[in-house]
Length: 193
Image (cartoon, rainbow, N blue to C red):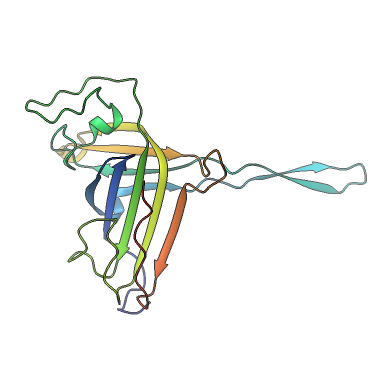
């Protein structure tokens, strides 16, 4: 890598977009991403009568990501995420905001962006860094928020949130894309969702 970047550390941008909605930004310290499970492409062997083995390929397993947020409210503006976990019949944006448990689920796109240009810019995970800047980006599609676990560890309100998705949609199209650039070209615009 040029720009003296030998690894991606510290700063990351996270953008979460409800299908058909607008992206909500979450600036993150990379260590607050506590789990990235990119599934498994497992195999299983079956013995033959001659002592040999044949390999059976197993379908790729589901994928997921868990990260910590620091909610300040129950809104949908990047200061909280509880309405992503419990979508309301109508998004509540008026004060006081009230979020009741809900059976409803929504689909999301998640964009993670590391760049040699951070923390000065860009300000959105879906905005490609300037030409000449190194970057690594992960785009995840058709993800469900499956867990929201608030905590008061270290005497500060936080929550661990988990999103899960199938590695492919029902047509066999991938639900995750990883991209990088050494700065010689700019990353393309994110895929519409």
